[in-house]
Image (cartoon, rainbow, N blue to C red; front, side, top):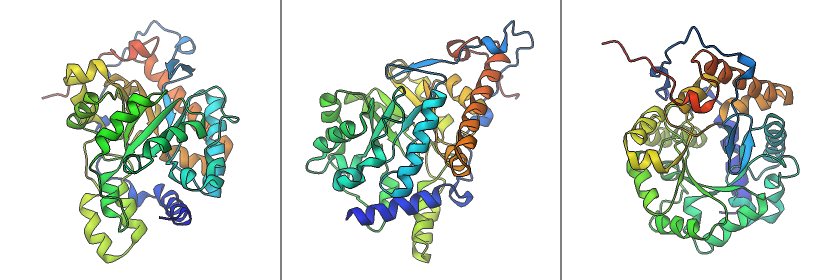
Length: 346
């Protein structure tokens, strides 16, 4: 695939990603998680500490703007806007797929954001399908260099690739390629799904090859199966892809499964994403075992409204997270992680 074709496809993905038609009709399951309210918190709201350390850097709250874009003039502007907002707000930033930066060096500026965000974690990004190709390991390490990144995300998207007419469906050899990357990378390697989730079976397989960071990217948010169906638009594509629009393990199901397995619970650093839509959702995901939380679509919508709307949304989520701590009697994130929950009535 040429760099021009990659740019066109990325442009189409970004245009479609925020539309209601590609949001799953199933929820991520977090609505079933209910905190027991603490009416006597014995706390001052403004004294609550939501800060965490992630990849060696202190964040104002455990939140990351998820991977979205890269490789077009429009995405460079968006990435710079996101980087400035993330730096100002003290949250992390994950870049979109950097494949085009490897194939066309003129596109690298969209990923060279360190001057906009000198103090926060920036995460580079490469597809698992590209990692197994000749030169894949070298390319992955180059992505880290281009972005001056604190970690590298390897995204897994077999369903998305299977629904693309030109998708890469040769997935043998990706597991050993990840294992080699983990051994040779000087920064952490984070394995991420793209919205249909990582379940406990895959998580255990990743743990066996040395992976210790996983972004669940569970079902219940944006459906990349739906995005590809929308992008192609033909009756044949609709017939093929529609049954998979809600495919996957929900974010809540994945978090519960990880927590139930002592090896996964005690070893993995879990990033929760998939349908996160508020600071209360962030709090629920943290309570269910996540260490960090990530979202894309809400920040994409806000960014399209302007810089102020984007920073206002991040501030709103921060305030909602602090309120969640306040009404559960949690002075900090560690306390929130063990805040009492309500059991569903029988």
